[in-house]
Length: 335
Image (cartoon, rainbow, N blue to C red):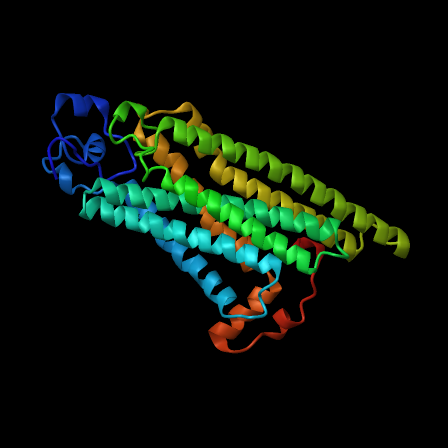
C-alpha cells in the first residue's frame, strides 16, 4: 500500500482533519473513534462488524429461499419467479457486505473496494426493483384476475426481470467505471467511494419507486375491499364474520409490508440527500444498518409466509408436510 493513496477499510470517507494533518494515513475513519490507540491500522470498526454479521444472516436466509425455489419445478409461476429474484438480490447483497468487510480489512485495495461496493449497490437496487415488481404483479393479479395466469403474463414477468436486473447492473458498474470519489475526496457522499451526485440519483430514484409502490398498494387495498364488499352483499355477511376479519387482516398486512420497507430505507435515503462526507460516520452507520435489515425481513414477508414455499421447505427439511400446512386455505391476508 502506497503512502500517497491510503485506503480506508470502512464505508466512510477519511476524516478531513486527520487527513490534512497527516497524523494517520491508514484506517483514518476507525481512528476517529479511538484516536488514542497506537496501532489504528489493526483496529476493526465495530459498525463494520455489524454490517458483516447482517450480511452473513442475509445470505444464509435468502440462500435457503433461492435453493427451495430453484429445486422445486412447481414454483415457476410469475409470483415465485419474482420472489426468487428478490431472494437472489438479497443473497448477493449479503455476500457483498461480507466480501467488502474481508477485502477492505485484508487486502486494503481500491479495486476490490470498488467491486464489492458495486456489488452491494447493484444487489440492493435489484432488491428494491424486485419489491416494486412484486407489487405490480400483485396489482395485476387482482385487477386482471380472470386472465392473470396466461402466457402473456409470464412473458411480462420475464421482461420485468430483465429490465430490473439490467438497470441494477448498470448502477452497480458506475463506481467501477470511474464514477467514484477516490480521486477527489471532497466529492464523496456519506458512503465512500460513491459520489454525492451518484447517491443523490439513487436516493431520488428510491423516493419515486416508493411513491409508485404506495399508489399501487392503495389500489390493491381498494380492490380487496371492493371484492370483500361484493361477497358480503351476495351472501349477506355481517362485519363480524371470519371473511371480513381476514379481509381486514389482508389490508393490515399490506400496510405492514409498506411500513416495514419505509422504516428500513427511508432514514438512509433522506440522510444521503442531506449529508456529505464531512458528517460524523456514526450517522451513516446508524441509518445504513437498518436499511440492511429490510433484506432480513423480506423472506419472512414474501417467502416463508407463502403456502407453496412452506410445503417445499418442509419437504426439503424433513421430507414431509404437516397437516396444518397442507390443509391451510388461502385468505385475503396472503395478498
